[in-house]
Every structure is written in C-alpha cells, then in structure tokens.
Image (cartoon, rainbow over all chains, first blue to last red; front, side):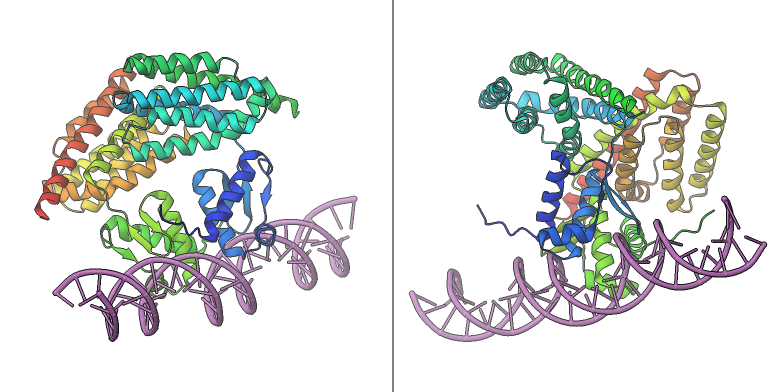
Length: 222
Length: 222
DNA sequence: CTTGAGTATAATGTATTCTAAATGCAGTGT
DNA sequence: ACACTGCATTTAGAATACATTATACTCAAG
C-alpha cells in the first residue's frame, strides 16, 4: 500500500468531525476558526477548508462573516434523514444482495457476533456505532453503486450521534440484535424483496425510537 | 429586501459552476487555481474554497497536490445518478402531490406551455433545461422535504449538462411534452401511485436515451 | 535503447498579514 | 428612560508570501 500524505486540511477535518460525532462539540455550538487553529497548531486556512468540507457533509452550518456552528438536527430533520436512509439503503441492498458471497455473509455474521458481545459487555458505546455501520456496509458491499454508497455513508455518519445518544439514554437498541439476524438470514436466502422491506422497517423503527426521544428532550427544554 | 453581500468565494463558485454547466469548461479539463484567480481578479484562496464547494456538489474532482478537474461522468455513473433521481424524485412527489393546490397546477401548466413553445421555436436550448427543472420543481414544491429536495436539485444540476447535450445531439427530448402532460394530469387527479410510477419511468427513459448517446460517443473516441 | 536516480519546475498546500464585516457598547440627544 | 449614532472590538474573508509535493526532464549507467 502506498504511503498516505494526508494534508493538514484533511487531518483537521477528521479531528473536528470526531469531536462533533462524539458529542465533545455539542450541536449549535459555534466553531471559532482561530481557536481551532491554535488548538491544532495550524493556521486558519486549513481550518476554514475543513469546515467547508464538514458543511458539505451536513455536520456544520457555515454563515458568511458569522462563522460556523455544529448543526443541530430537529426532530423533523431526523425524520426526513431516516426516511432517506431507508429508501437509499434498501436500494443499495437490492443491488448488492445477489452479489454477496458466502464469505461476505460469514464476515457479516462475525461482525454481528462482535457487536452483540460488545453490547452485552455494556462497554464502549463508541464501538457499537462503528460495528453497526460495518455490518450494514458489508451487506451493501457488492452493490457497485459508489454514489449511492457515498450518500448512505454520509447520512449514516450524520445520524450517528443521535443513534449513540439513543443507545445511551434508552439503554441500547434492544431489538436490533434479532433484527440483524433476521436481515442476515434473508440475505443468505437471497430473498431480495423481503430483505429490502425488512431493512426499511428496521431503519424506520430506529427512527421512531430516536424521534420519540428527541421530542421528549425538546419538550423538556421548555 | 436586504442587499446581499456575496463573498468572493460564492461569486467565484457561481462563475465556475456556470462555466462547467454551460460546457465552456469541458469534462475532465483541469482547473488551475492560479489561472482562475487571475482571470477573476481574486487571490487563490477564494478560488480554492469555491472549488471545494463545487467538489461537494459533484461538479469537480479535487485531488490533493494534483489539482481539480471538472468531473467526467461515465455511462455507468450516469446510470446510477438517474436511478437515484428516479428514486428520490418519486419520493418527493409522493410527499408533495396531496399538497398541490389548484394554483400550483396552473403554474405548472404555464411552465409547460412555455417549455413547449420554446422547444417549438427551436431556440435557446439554454432555456429548456431551466424550464424543465422549474416544471419538476413545481410538482415537488409542497413536499416539505428540504434535504431530499436539496439532493434532487444537486443531481439535477449535475446531470443538466448531459441532458443539454442530449437535446442538442438527438434533436430534443421529443417524447417529453406528452409525458409531462400525462404526469401533470395524474397529479391533478391525485393518483399518487400512478404519478410516481410514471415519473420514474419518465426519468429512466431519459436516462436510457442519454446513456445510448454517451456509449456511442465513448465508442467513437476509439 | 531502456531504466533509474536526481534535479528542476510548476502546481498545490499553508502561514502570515491585511481588510472588511458584524456585534456590542458608550455617549449623546431627545 | 429611550433610541439613535458612531466607535471599538472581535471574528471572518482575502491577499500575499512561503513551503511542500508531484511530475517532467536530464543524463548517466546498465
């Protein structure tokens, strides 16, 4: 593998992204270019460019002359994003499912097992999000739909913090494990229609859980 | 109305975008920061930032230390993008159709008439693309799905140059007028299912036309 | 003639510096 | 007490200057 020469902009973008996704930077919080620059020992230029990138990813709002803030997703936006995810991920799966090899399915199952034990252990809510993404990603890996995949990854990253919040506050996605097993089985028998429908329901179910939680929080603010 | 203080970055982005969409900058062509900067009488910073924005829009490829090039869409990418459009626009329409007012439908019909006379006149292929977008946009205007809308607009902008090319080379989207009328009628009677299915077919039809054209061109290159 | 190291060059990436916009505050006048 | 004006401060936007990377080219060795 070729050595990677990462540009400062990319490094800064990754750092800020991580901070937003981990919740270290809270939604709505302003992101001062100068502060970030000194903190990371770079000039403001790479910071600006990183912020622009993050804006494209939907993690940051950028207003001319006013600065950037971490995006704050309302319940209705969550709603829309999860609808999109259901639509797009089902589309991806439908293009991928027939191409899935036995090895892919084994890999997916291994990820699932890992995910389950991580959840049982109760530790590292950090890991579960990543494993969840990896499981889904494995199922989509044969889709040969790069643009769709990019969209899906973007939205999934974007909703990650809310999923994590959900896990923390609601004590975990308790229904997810069985659902994942079912989904995997449907993929194994190549039942495209059922698998896609089930995937949609799976995503929309998560949406409803999270939305309820968000609405409660929004209420409590008053 | 408040006067708008457009930042140089925004102005540059608009200028470059227009050049790419109009074909003045051809696909695959490298975009030199310095050249663009002097051409527009700004420094390279706003040019860089504009290019980053355009990359997010999918109009430009940005490779570290190598520079930016106008994106070149292969037949397979066209394929995928139009599939996405079909999916997303049908979704939008399904959320919008019940909210469409009589006035909306009248407006849409006016745009259609304008579009048809523009095509009859044979002039300004420039106008037809815009009118086409406006017609579709009108139908989606009540969807209340801002994120989806943004995506649709992005992809529609991105494929605009190919649609335009299609119009030029194939002598126009000859089947489009009737199809648009049919679609409008289905919206008027609020037949969501049929309207969405028809819209998908409409978009996928355009895709096939354009793909054929592209494959022919790609062949001719050899 | 081909291949490879090394250098030259041209382009991008980044730091520094300067400019301009937005916001808050003080002071004045009503 | 209130509103308005103008200044000061802070922050972002943009220009200039410098550093780094990638690539094209040269030239020598095999």
